[in-house]
Image 1 (cartoon, rainbow, N blue to C red):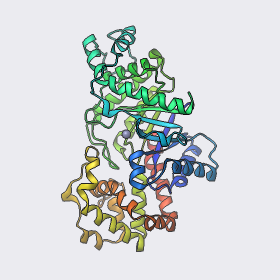
Image 2 (image 1 turned 135 degrees about the horizontal axis):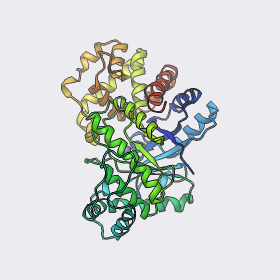
Image 3 (image 1 turned 45 degrees about the horizontal axis):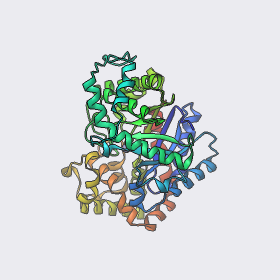
Image 4 (image 1 turned 30 degrees about the vertical axis):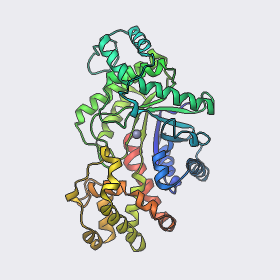
Length: 414
Ligand SMILES: [Zn+2]
């Protein structure tokens, strides 16, 4: 099973927007921008909203049928490990094997020697087309990097083989993710990691490193754009080199996690991908939930009342909601308006605070991030929330489609 050149992961916390999300891919395809939709949901998300992996498969299949989508689509078991993968096995055909927790862990398993031997074939000063500066490797350097990532690669191998046993070789897409960690991986790290994945026999099709800078939830990229661009270009060059020399699948590509709403890096990403004529996977989650809550605020009445309630609840449970996301949010508490202030605003004004329009004077990235992590409160509201989704399906769906199409697909892949 191959993954197409361009693919985008779309999360849908509450499972109601599959058709609205797919409508964006249909329109993009009509304009010549062909991107494979991948519905992703992590185990953590399933636990918080009390959903089952089978529901994501049903949502995707329904949307595809309803819209007559003839191209391929995937269902991603996002950020799984050996303990959480089993209930995804019957329904997912894309697996994001998350081994970030194993980075830097000691292991007594052999493997470093094989990585060094593979890298020696292309030399300690490998000739990698398009990198910003020639890599200067040494045996010590390779040894140190391989040792740091070996436990993670070995774990990825265990999880991969577990999935392969259940689904059969070639019947699923394999992604390996290392993004949920504190320190970014350099292009040199990536080269060694890909060599290690190759020696472990993992036919990895997408790899999600941690890039430099902050990838905060639902808001723009924070970091040095020039450094990001150089690193991203080098990473693309390394991936192409690894495909050619390490025997990895020819469609192997980078996966950008927490990729939603990173407007300032879309242009450099688009440019780099075109220059290399390579593929890309961009994974998003949560941006659709924010469209739901912003649209409810805008419709007024019971929708606005619910949005206000979620905001008040999120302020009340600030620490509890933010703790699991500490490394991926930066909320300025002083920038958060009081409940009284928010309750005095008309729906449009509250929605403008939430919607990701950086040029709008009312846009408030702290409010947006707080509501991003506040989806648990809507989950706890159960059918009260989902009946609002049904009742206002039309305006919400319009916003969901527009967000995926105009702010994401056409900026990244066109
Ligand atoms: Zn991730």
